[in-house]
Each structure stands twice: as structure tokens, then as C-alpha cells.
Image (cartoon, rainbow, N blue to C red; front, side, top):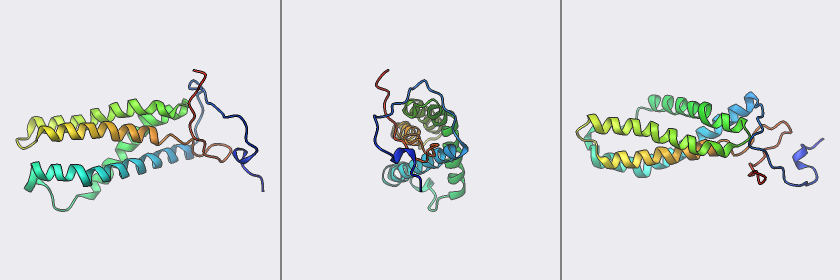
Length: 171
């Protein structure tokens, strides 16, 4: 059995150039999307459970549903992460600099969550400013983590190994 090249004898660290554009396979894109979905769903589940739900209950009370509508939530998450992956994470990974996705993803998150929150605050009597601040900050942090975290491993590399990202020390 032949071992992948990354399991061979240790060599000097490999530093990728940020300017090196590499072609990614459909499997790498799928892994990036799935990793981003997992990160997003875990982070958002924790936030919704421990922070947002109590905040919404305090300010919206009886306006909230007892049982969540899971289909619209699932459709939103799958589509939103697909958009985030396509617009932010995939281009950064193709450029060989997955960490370049963090700031653009955070900006997209602040814009998306801000759109929802400011619109709700603008048109609804019961919407509280704390909902706007907390959820916008959350969109910023969650999307930034998801954008960068999904691309940290160059999954599905041609040699069969997952390579952790290493900063380009020559830049």
C-alpha cells in the first residue's frame, strides 16, 4: 500500500502563496460547503438556544411560535450557507488563502442580519433595539467564523491529505 505524500518523511513546512490560484475539485467544494454548514449550524444552534430565544421571549412573548417551522429554517440555512460559500469562502480557498474569507464573510453576516433586524425594528412596534444589536453582532461573528472555518483545511487535496493552512511568511 502506498501512503499519501503527506505521510512520507517530514520535510520543511510548505507555505502557500496567497497569490497562487489553484483549481478545486467538486469534492473539495462539497467538503467546503458541508464543513461550512456544520460550523454554521452548531454555532447558530448554541446562540439561538442560549441567547436569542430568551431575548426574543422577553421582548416578543406571545408572538412567538411554540413549535418551530423547521422546513423554512432548513431552506434558509442551506441556501444562506451556499451563498456564503459561493461568494466568499470558495474564492478565498481557490486563491490559496482561506483566511481571506473571514472579513468578507463577517461583512456579509452583518449586512444580512442587519437587514432583517433593522427592517423588523423599523416596521414592528414590539421590536427592541437590543434584538438589533445582539443579532447583528451575531451575524458578523457567526458568518466570519463560518467563512474562515470552512476553508481552513484544504480538504480533498490531490495527494489525499488534509493540509492545515499556514501563513505565508514571505509576504
